Structure formats: C-alpha cells, structure tokens
Length: 361
Picture 1 (cartoon, helix red, strand yellow):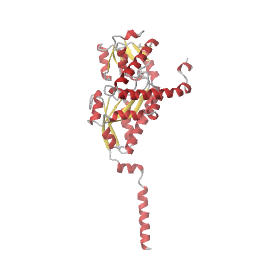
Picture 2 (cartoon, one colour):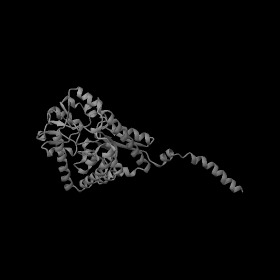
Picture 3 (cartoon, helix red, strand yellow):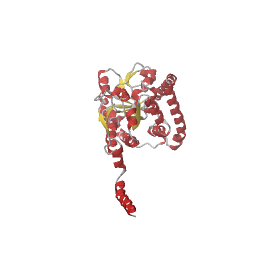
Picture 4 (spheres, one colour):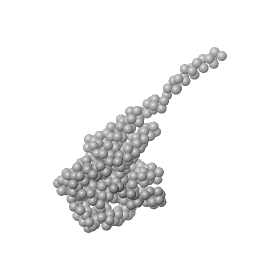
C-alpha cells in the first residue's frame, strides 16, 4: 500500500513536467541551431529577384524561432555571382539565392526549372513543379552536383529586351549583339544574333559603351529601377523567352541532409510563403512600371507575328538539338511537353482567352 502511494505521488509530480514540453521546446532540445552563409546572384535592391533572398532570410528565422539563420550576402561579397553554383557544390558556402537558368552551361536541362522559351505561365509552372513531377526531376539533376534546391519565388512574364532600333522581320536580328538570359540566347543565335550572358550589374555599362546593341534583363518593375530607359529607346514585348521564372535557394546537399525533418519543413515553408508573396507582388506592380517607362519617352513595342513565329521555330530546333546532345535535357523536355499537352485540356476550357476579355476603356 505504501509503495502504491509513493508511485502515485511520483506520477503526479511527473505530469506537469511532461505537459510543459511544447513542439517549440522539443525542437530547441533536439535541433542544433544552424548558422549558414547564403550568397545571392541578385542584389537585395532588385524587386523580387533580390528581395526574395532577403525575405527568405527573415521568414525562415521567424518560422524557426531563430533556430535557422541563412545570413544573406550581396553578390560578390563571398563569391562572384556566376560562381555561386560551384561554391555551393563544393561546400565553400552553404547556400545561394539564385535561379537555375544561370547554370545551363553545366546542365542544359536546368533551364526547365528557371524559364524557357514559350514556356508556361505561373499557374501552369507551379502545377507541373509541385504536382506534375517537376520537383523530383529538379533535385535529381542538382543532387549529381552535391546541391539540393528549394523553389523560393516566381515572377511574371519578362520583357524581351531594350534596343535602339525597331524590328520588322526576322532578318533584322542578324548581326545583333545582345545580352540574353539562359537558353533564349541560343535561340537568337539561330537567327543570326550574337548572345552573351552578363550579370545584372554589367549590363548598363555594356549598353552605354556600345559593347552590346541590346539587352533583356527582367520584368518592367525591375528594368525601370535598373535605369535601362536612359540608354535605349525601344522596349519589346512579349517576353517569349521567359513567360514565368522560378527562383530557388540552392543548399549544399550534405548540409541539407544534416538538417532535421522539422528544419527541412521550415525551409520549405518559408520558401512556399515566398512563392505566394512574389507571385502576388509581381502581378500587382507591372502596370505602374510600364506607365513610368513610357513617361520617360520609351516606345513600348510588340514583336511582329512573323518574328515571334521565327523565335518559336528556332526554339523548337534548339530543343531538338539539345535533346539529341543531352539525355537529361531530352528526359525533362519530354516530361514537360507531356504535362503541358494534358494540362491544355483544362486550360483551353477553364480559362478565358485574352481575346475574349473585355478591354478597359
């Protein structure tokens, strides 16, 4: 009897101690704090492109209660922007805020996890990535290079370039020297242009010095802030090469694997919130930027149908060539095409086409 009383008393004392163990306190006792360095390909001053990284830094710290710190560093502070891939792969730094289109020279198929010519809009892109198998393919490629990637933002269509001349037919592109992003540069080369990839901070000097004849960089809200309107008279649309763009946090694979399941979920949650925020912001701010650019005296131009058709035909040629050259490119391209063909059954019936919408006065 006395023994039973002693055991009962011990249980009463133990219950309050157990009830004080919340998910937060359990996390603090099981997950070691993480303090990692994260370089960025884009400066933090750039709307969406750069602010995505800063917002992720803040949100992941908030969600984790300070347990996860991804210290943001401006481009060049740790490594040059275009060396971020190797730095993360080798473990020289733990993470980078970037977009995989910068690394198509290493893995051509990475273009499909950033943007590609005549690609999907934001809704279709996210559907393919999260529900259509894109996410698994993404990390299948990155894991070969000791990298894990988490999609951490998305942007609306980009403009397709700043120029000081108008274009009327495909032949007008011959001899053009232009800064162009990703696989779209290879499309332009099919039409006789010369394309090169420059980091954002190098574009303006190249335009001013005449080293290049034109350049594309981003969406109107970003291009306005970059000041390209000071050195170019014509701004071309639509962004056939980037109808939507995915952004990511690259993390050294060994470092990623060292995280607990809770910490991985916190990273995913912070990035998921970033996707929502960037999608909404990107669509909300472009009209104001376009009006501001036009007010500077820039002429907003639309590519003639003949040139758009030439772009698309050249892209299909490039995709065919790359599929023959690279097995991974062919695998992802076929996967994307199959998803889009299936998705079109819904897209064409569920949504109004632009031509059916009532235009504002």
